[in-house]
Every structure is written in structure tokens, then in C-alpha cells.
Amino acid sequence: MPDYKRLSIPFRLVLLCALALLAVLPLSSAAELRVCPEGCSQAGIQAAMGEAQPGDTITVETGTYRDSPIIGTPVNLHGLDTGSGLPILEPEKGRVIMAANGATMQGFVVAGPASGGAGDNCTLEVVLPAFIFLNDFNSRSSVCAEDTADWNSSDGINYQFKSRVLRSRLGNYWADYNGTDKNRDGIGDEPKILNDKNIDYYPLMRPIDEYIIPDEKETKVQLIHARVGEPFTISIPANPTTGYNWTADYDYVLLAQGKAIYDMSPSRALGSGGTSVFVFTPMKPGKTTIYFVYKRSWENIVADTRSFLVDISK
Image (tube, rainbow, N blue to C red):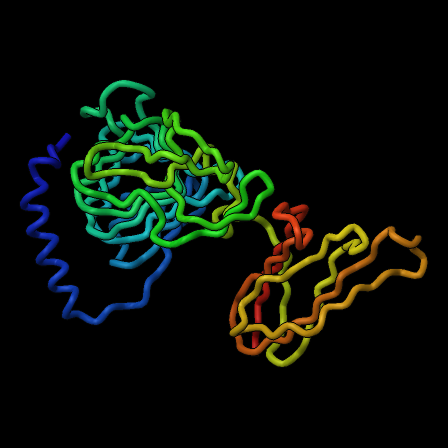
């Protein structure tokens, strides 16, 4: 295997020249490349890297990936649970190398030795500064961190942990982390220290799949076809007498919400519930998702969630 640590200095010079060139060139719009075991345009991460441009997103679907990609372009490497868990990075030979200043990696299970020093046995090597968060690591020894990386999300993220709705910056799950979680928000009270330059300040107490985070799991949702200016309704079973109500989170640029009503069928017994009816009017063409949360206003516990994908045409 090539010694990328020895190559790191000339690699840095090449990268700086490339970044200087990019600064004077017009930027094209970011694209998404899909990687999956079968049926996608790319079957491996390294193949997708060969086509990726700076700023692109490489979405890697559920599966086990055994290639040893070099992330040499600043892309967003995004693992997506498409039904059977997060994608697993388990190179047969070599390792995954983060070698692009500003590249992002999130949403993966990173295999690696369960104990012992990092040495040359790590699965992920960080050659240049990168953003690495919302991943599951077997242990500290899964990582060789030569340069400084940011091991947390740069902004707060809305998430649900054990039925509580919360918001915070989020780090990674480390199976060998032994910290405490006194406020039970799913984030460790003490940082996970890899070395003096690499610290996860928001380590997760449980694996990623135990946190519900919008858009981090691809699920089947109901599709609604709508037209600009023509209202449509969404009806969801509800029972306000229990104190639970539905609230909608939607794109205010594409949609305008009308007054929601509660419809209790005359045939139902008092207190048995009915239907909450929401009215939306499309304002502009586009695609968006409406998220509904069912909870009591005085509690931070979610009883149910619903999602509706809206395709708006002129």
C-alpha cells in the first residue's frame, strides 16, 4: 500500500494549487452521485470520486463497501440508510483516506479493530482537515488522525432520542466511549479525545440508528401531486381530547398553510377521536416534504410522525 503519510507534503502543495485554480474558475452547481451495491450509476465510492466535482454530494446507500477510496476532492460523502441500516465501510485492503481540505463524511459504520493502538490497522485516515460526524466507530483505533478534523456538526441538528425532541451539535458514536450522560440527551458529558488535535466534543451515547434525524433515513412516504394555486388537503387520524395534536413543518416558500380543522365523525362516540384536516396551497413549482409531529404541547415526547412528499407543477 502507498505510504500516504510520506506523500502528504507534496499532496498538500498540489491541493493548494488546485484550490487556487478553483478560486478563479466559475463554480458549477453541485450534483448528487448515488452509490449502491446494485442498480446505481456507481457501484463503488472510488468510482464515484472519479466523476465528482468540488461541492458534489456522493450518497452511499445501505450495503458493505470494501474498496479503499481516497477522498481527494472536497465532497459531501453521505451514508444513507435505505432500509437495512447505515452503509458499512470495511476495506479489504488499505483504508478510507480523507485527503481533501473541507470534505465531509457522515452516516457510516466504520469497521476497524476493536482494541489496540491505531497503528497501520485503522480503517479511516485523516490526511487533511475534514468534517466527520454522525458515524459509528468500533473504537478509537478505527481512526488514524494525522491532521486536525472537526468531529462534530458545525450547526445544531434537530433529533429525537428516546421519544424526546432535542437540538444540539452532534458528534459520532464510539463503541469504546465510557462517558456519562446525566441529562439523558444522548450526548456524552465528557469529550472523546483521539489526540491533542482531534476531539469529539459531542460524542453520542448510542449508535446512530437509535437517533431519529430528519433526512438520515430514506423511508417510503406518501406522494402528493399538486399544482400552483390549487389547494390540497392532508387528513390524519387524531384525538385532541387526549391532549395530543399534530403540528406541521413545511417549506414556507413553496407552500402556504390554511386553517387546520378537526373533523369528528357523527358516528363516533364522544372522546373516540376523529381526523385532523390540513389545507395547503402551493405557491411555486418544486418538490418538498411536509413533516407532521403528534405530541402534547407541554411534553417533549413524540407519539407519532408522518411525512408527505409534495411534487408541485405549474
